[in-house]
Image (cartoon, rainbow, N blue to C red; front, side, top):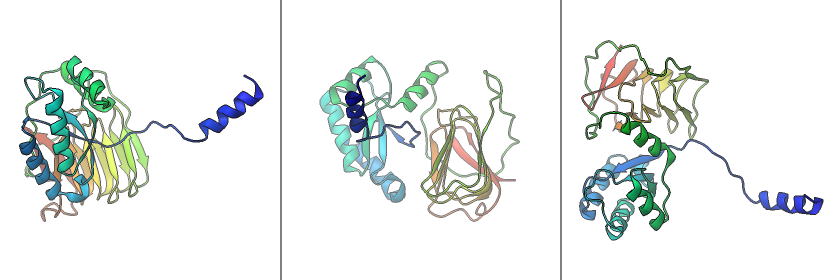
Length: 258
């Protein structure tokens, strides 16, 4: 490559950077093809936690609809999502029809949700997700075991700051410090926070329902395991500031002190 051509290429590339990173994006599992019903259901979520869901980027999952909706129906659903206050940024990976639909609509298939689908295809179908309800009386946590053998946890030495996100891909996440308000801790495995959990914690990011969240001081904004979540506008008095563990039982979130 000549000097002038290399200089021209450098000038062009300086106009923008391209980086890969982990972005926390919620998934809207559409269970009704009625746009009005979809809008009403999402508006309830937005009212419950406006700081979390207003103008939040979401992936639209159409896999629960049968028969597969046509383009006009999908356009109406996307408009309903926007009208509820959320911003659809792509479609969840599904089948060949979803692939073709994404091309026609000019929407991407999000890799994170594609991986979740591919995992689901190798296991039994999961039950419908439900809103989390806190409970007490946790049984002893079983030792985690995976078909691929033990995995080394990602260790975050120091607190996760406001606006920061830490993601443990294919592993547990250990935070030796606090998770601040507005910060996010995500893991495909379990999450251990040896400090105050004030922000958001998402365990089992690819759908592993056996994962758990452990923290030394519970003050979370939101917790989620395998997509089942609860938003805390006000913390339950029996758990606020305590060391707790959170797990999933019959598709309900359970919380207990220890």
